[in-house]
Amino acid sequence: MEVTTRTQGDVTIVAIAGSLDSITSPQAQQAIDAVVAHGARKVAVDFSTLEYVSSAGLRVLLSLAKQLKAKGGALRTFGLNQTVREVFEISGFATILSVYPGEGEALSGL
Amino acid sequence: MATGFQMVMGPRPGEVARVLAAFAAFAESRAVPAEARRALLVVLDELLTNIASYGMAGRADGSATVEAVVSPDALQVTLTDNGPQFDPLARMAPDTTLSVEDRPIGGLGIYLMQHLVDEAHYMRMGDQNVLVITKRLPAGASPELEGGL
Image (cartoon, rainbow over the protein chains, first blue to last red):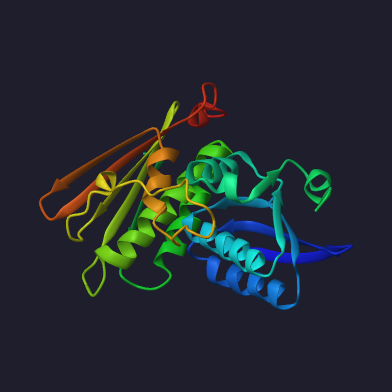
């Protein structure tokens, strides 16, 4: 699992590669907390290189959503593969984390 | 059997990571379609972390066995552990309609497992929990027949 960030205007794009599960989520949580601590308010999470996410990973994403919401920020996600999409739909996360097909759609109007 | 997988997990740190990595390699070596492989990795992460956290808590003799068999139309995984009786299929579903602020952290793992597999059966056999889960593979995937004939 690897978390990389880049910025485009006032949007921070956070790419999570590999797997987001019980093994990698502590490291992902640290990386995500650092992104928010550095002042990111508008965040787009790029899942195009993410293999899968389990409930431990969903906890990290929920924590990011809550932190951004508390600071008046916004969160969007894009690039989900079929498994990640399925996990989002089953868990109800598809309705709480705005899901877009690609980067262009996710960044438009954010 | 050429298509089988078997691994024993003990109550040591790092065991879930070891099993997940080996299972991923097994599924890839048998050309299991990526979606089925990924779904089963999610399921195994949920079930094995549960067993490691609860079933093996405070037990030096805690042990779990993960077995998998690939057939042309399905991937079947059997999980056996010697923890206290626990039927993961009897758990209540969490409320997934709550808003992001009202949602409690956690509690989703077993619910995800139930929905990501096509069949799941639980049995208590002696002092063991036995869970058999089946993920159907798309027609034509026939992993072990490809290149083997």
